[in-house]
Amino acid sequence: MTDSTVARRSDRTRAAILQAARERFAADGYDRATIRAIAADAGIDPSMVMRYYGSKEGLFAAAAEIDLRLPDLTSVPRAEIGARLVGHFLDLWENATGESLVILLRAATTNEAVRAELQRILATQVAPTLAAACPRPEEVPTRMGLVVTQILGLATTRFVLDLPVVAALDRATIVARLGATVQGYLTEPL
Amino acid sequence: MTDSTVARRSDRTRAAILQAARERFAADGYDRATIRAIAADAGIDPSMVMRYYGSKEGLFAAAAEIDLRLPDLTSVPRAEIGARLVGHFLDLWENATGESLVILLRAATTNEAVRAELQRILATQVAPTLAAACPRPEEVPTRMGLVVTQILGLATTRFVLDLPVVAALDRATIVARLGATVQGYLTEPL
DNA sequence: AGTGTTTGCCAACGCCTGTTGGCAATGACG
DNA sequence: CGTCATTGCCAACAGGCGTTGGCAAACACT
Image (tube, rainbow over all chains, first blue to last red; front, top):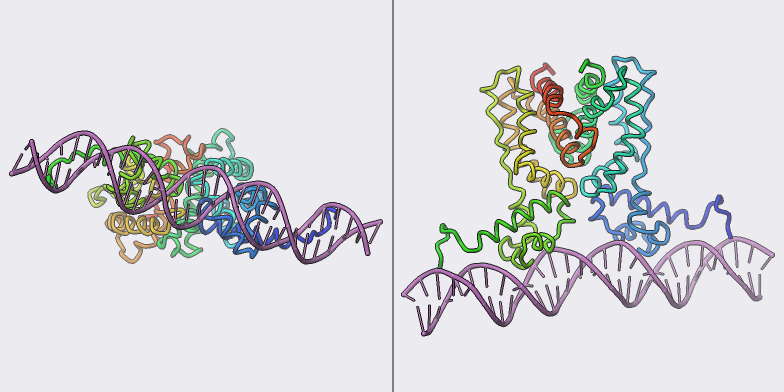
């Protein structure tokens, strides 16, 4: 038996499947992305997908793993928190992480389990970060709710729905205006 | 032959199908909502759906028809435009129209044609309304893009994704804070 | 009463889906 | 060189899907 820490011969196939899955899930959503199509993209047999990822759900879970890498807001000047956050999220979407986010958002609209996963990410990664920027702990849920409507609103309209009016906005405008909005949601008295 | 303007015997069936379709499409999205399930809900045979609506696409088109009934913003005090708009959209979701909107948004994330329909609605119903509130015509696209991120952000997070942090926000808070945001996107100098 | 249309159900088609089991080829290891 | 796990493909399964055509009952109209 080959040691599990050592590179296995099947690693390239595993990676090819995962990459193809990411692209298909991001482009087509969970339901329309078929294992057969993913396997074809990866240049292998559909049965390999099952062997390496167990099921379609298992493959999806692997493809939708996300680390938002949110910055520590306590070290950011208080007046720049909003713009900083918006800029960070815009950056995320130009990386591989962005694809995972699109996958997650697209699937979350029709899949209960994915919605739960999205909530988990919000609770474990976003909530602590925002809490650091809110003086009053009891206001955190409200402020976070407001921020979420704006940040995820940008995400869905620009990267998931790809609406022309939103896609046409340039980065500077977004960072300035949405940054000010998020800033207000986080710091203005309620 | 019965006159087409007179009530036909099949009207009740047609309506039952349409209502079941709305609920299923809203709850499950386009792909997961099956004609068989819709027919079962309506208490009739799947083949009737085909006879009366031609195809699944035809049924969806009938179920997703929308009139946003946006108010004429020229008759609204300039300082209240934002809150008025947000309030109006919140109202929409408590009516039958809201179900159609959820249907549309849910399906738009995975279906190209539905996305086009959503753009059509934005262009024909939202754009003219917002244009009336913008002094400078050349700024309309930018301002509309900004507004769309916030309004549709509220819609998706609260009514489609049903995120607890957003669902917990009370109406007054939403109208006040998001209203101010939309107000700024529409009227503040760019 | 008789004729033609409308309404509805049933059974089936062809297709695509996720998933499974077996079998050949390749590699690792003694 | 012989043994055994690994990697991959092929063929097939069972189930669900949108969709179709035909046939019986209900109705409308003369």
